[in-house]
Image 1 (spheres, rainbow, N blue to C red):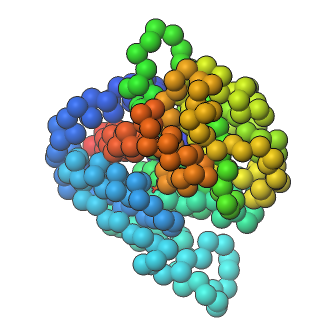
Image 2: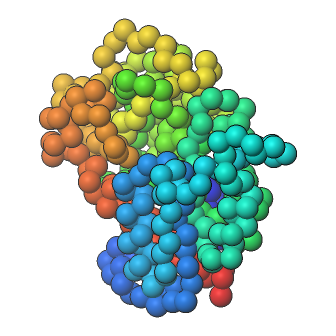
Length: 317
Ligand code: CP
C-alpha cells in the first residue's frame, strides 16, 4: 500500500480486516517494526479519537510520532497557488509539506471539507496538495469527502459482531444536527459497505441524498421506519445537503434514533463514529443501552490505524 486515502487503496478488504483483528489479539506483537521511522500526524481540524488512536497504533509499532495540531500551533497556511502572500497567511502548504518531507517517513493528515466551495471539497483541494507534494506515503485522517480509517474500524466492528450464517442488513441513517456537517463519514461508510458482504441501505430525508458518485446503486430510502425494518446494524450520522451544498433543508419528522425506533429492527447493534450530540442524533437510552457498540467501534480505531501503518511500513522496507 503506497498511500491510504480511500477503500481503493486496499487490495483485499477481508485480508486487512483479518489483519486488524489479529493485531487486536496482541497489539504489541511487532513493537520494533517502525523503529527508526517517523510518522507525522498533521491535524488541520479538531480530533479526539483519530489523534489518540493513531498515536497508540504508531507507538505499538515502535514508530516515532510527531503530532502537529496545525490549526492551533502552526503558521496560518496559504493553500492557493500563485497568491501574493501579503495578507493573513504566513506559510504556503507546499512549503509546509516540503519541510514535513524532511522530517517524516509517513505523513498522515486531517483536512476536512472547507464547506465553502463544493468544487474545492469534491476535488479534495487540500488532500490533493499533500498527494502532489509529499515524497513519502500519505494517509488520510479524514478528508473533505472520506474518512477511511474510520470506515475500516467500522468494518472490523461489524465483522466482530456478526456470527450468523447470512448477510447482515446494515442501515446508515441520517440524524438531526444543529449545523451543516460534511458528508465524509457517510460517503466513506457507503463505499466500504459496498465492498462488504452485507445488505446495505441508506435512509435520509428528501434533500439529503449523498453524492451519487458514492451511493452508486445503493438503495436510498426517504422513510426511516421503512429502512430500519429488520436491520441488524444501524449506523447513525448527520450530514448536510450535498445537492444544495452546505444547506440544511427542513425536515418535518424526528429522525433521532430512539429505543422505540430500534424496536423496528432485528435487535440491531447501534454504531456512531463519535463525537455524537446526545438526545439530538440519538437518545441517551440508545447511546447507553446494551445495543450500542459505539465504544467498541472507537477502540477499533487503534487496530484499523495499526493495520494500515503496518502495510505502509512493509512498502518502506
Ligand atoms: N470519529 C472521529 O474521527 O473522531 P475524532 O473527530 O474525534 O477524531
